[in-house]
Amino acid sequence: MRSERVTAGQEAAEMVWLLGQPHLADFLDFVREKVVGGAAIPPKRLADEWRAANDHYYDLEKSEAGAADGIESLPLPPEMRPLARRLRANRYFRRAFDTLPVRIRMVELDRLIVSQLHVERQFVDALSTRLDPAAGPEALFHFCQPAERRVAPVRAEQLGPDRFRFSSESTDFRANPSALLAPALAGKVPSFGPASAAIALVVGYGSNFLSVVASGGRMVLHNGYHRAYALRALGFTHAPCVVTEVTRKDELRVAASEKVSADPEFYFAAKRPPLLRDFFDPKLRKILRVVRMETVIEVELKVRTSTAAEL
Image (cartoon, rainbow, N blue to C red):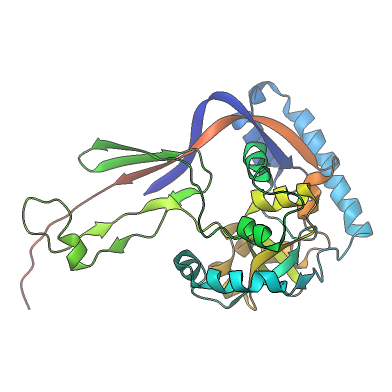
């Protein structure tokens, strides 16, 4: 399987981008390739904006050193505890968190460390309409931990006998693990004769639970960036999050994104890493008009048949 984000059309969408963090080259490439009219923007102007934000982070390292330490993680209120027990029984939850111990806690939003440096306003606005700023504990829990949710439509095409193409506007659209189907299911797959085995190559969505990775008194937001941004914009200070506590680097490869596990010192040891609240700092954020993108997954099958001497 191969997955990529490609241009879906010339209609523009707004993106909130967090400036000043590694890497400048990534920012310049993104503006040139994805921003409407970005190729005509002088790189020096963009670099100057990025540098000003980077200087602001340098000042924050002095004035807010240790701001990410000791983030509040509180017990769930009584109204949420039955909901949390039901969530743990959910099949998507069990599959998503089947390796390391997890807890569900009320986590402070402002001091969450972020590794994803952009959010799309369209998704944030759509999410914001689903939650009243005065929502009670039950509504807040379901917003953050949606066991059932609406998903964007998927377009499926067969490009050839062994090639398939799937596309969706959702950034959460992805290839899921493949599986060898049980013989009883294999028999239901159309074939020229009796079927003895079948393989499922699954495309779909992630579990999409609001979750964080915790270590040494710090927490990195792992999943649910648009919901966390929407919650903060609506005035919420804490949210029910699935918390995975890691105690060594090897566990990061299981629990965290590739970006975080590749540079854990930056996120868990830097004096002042980027925080969720930085998206709301006019000195650090930039609004970009980007060409709408869609996620495309291509699947190509290769079958090889051979014979070997029986031992």
